[in-house]
Image: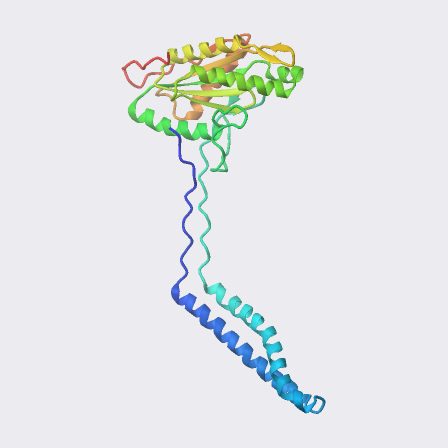
Length: 303
């Protein structure tokens, strides 16, 4: 399910052989002309100074002055020739631009639920893993989920999405420091990952928000996974600078149904369910309305 995001760079446009030969002949002619002109100028300069220079120096002086003048004129003539020929040569083809991935939900800050919006993706060589938690990045998640989206719609399979947010994450950072908040986020990511199957997709959307894509999972199976993650985090105890730090998470779950026209719609449903969990007092799981099924065959549970 990992997409190949490497940009395809077209090869440079080949330079026509005739133009290459033209360039070489032009440079050769310019060099020969510069040498001849230098010799003429050197000879004329020596003739004008014949009465001043000693008789023994006249022959050698002509060659030396001609060589000096040629040394100055050859680079200048070569540069002028290239300036005349270069505009006729084909330019190198610019690298192809990478089409941005479709927008996905973006976290509005620590402790806030993600909502649909525009999240432009610019760099196709960006790392697939979040540097802090090791979870996938939002860019990688959207690309992989988009590919899965096409597959599940083609085969009529069920899938679900979870949105997990650390409760009072800003307060935790304020009371214990951002280093403690980072350590807690890493531990929560580890707990969530240990609950998932190898082919489930876990990503960090920024702040304290994690998103999980669950293929082959119906809404009830998604609720089961969400509750297990919530329980694991609730039992987590982080030893930090002589203190024991605790945290909880709120989880919103949404099944992917026939009524969802795009991934953004599922992210919006999961974000709405997450807001309901926050409003209900946090440390709980809420689900979006169950969408119509795409096929009559029951999906496998995530358990």
